[in-house]
Length: 141
Image: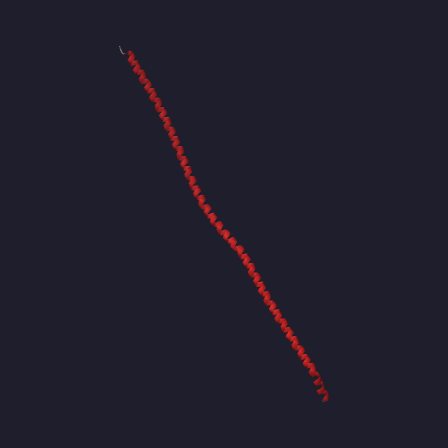
């Protein structure tokens, strides 16, 4: 038995050392796990920040495109209204020019009619004058 007790006593410092090494190993493993977990959380935080920054950057572009589209839509509506007004005004101008042209034609017709009447009146006046002179010459003095 003394040998067994000697073996037990000699294994005791080895067991203590093994136990201490196991504890150190487990402590180092826990430190590594904690460090790895910390780095994982930092990586997730960094990735989240990057994603948010990218989304914000893209949102600025999208917002600008949306504002530009709204401005374009407003300009298109304004242009359509102005084009309709211009078409209406052009139609009015065409109507006025046609009316003016018709009035000029009528003035020309009246002028031709007046010339015709004037010629007829001159013919009648000449005929009356001729008759009157003929009567004066045939009358005894």
